[in-house]
Length: 133
Image (cartoon, rainbow, N blue to C red; front, top):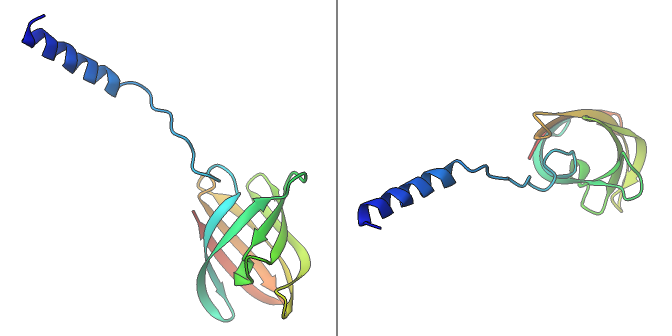
């Protein structure tokens, strides 16, 4: 095979490889509500930004545990239920070890589970939050 034909075949092979489909693995939590989120919260004490984690409760489909909800700490678990793209936080009392808090609220995901919007109350005070991946 001449040098010219070798280059042509090499170029043809390179072009064909460029057209092959590429399989992309989703990021952990992508396409679901589960995983780590950056939360931009606005409440009676002003705005704050923090990280929280939403985990599926093993053996309980549709139930979640939210860790570091409103910066209460990674050890504090707030219960929630998920139905499609909607999240409900039923009224509950949680403690961070030094104080107890009454929490309730709801939210929804959008943009293929890349963003969330929440409204909730903590001890009767109104909060809103936007969450992103």
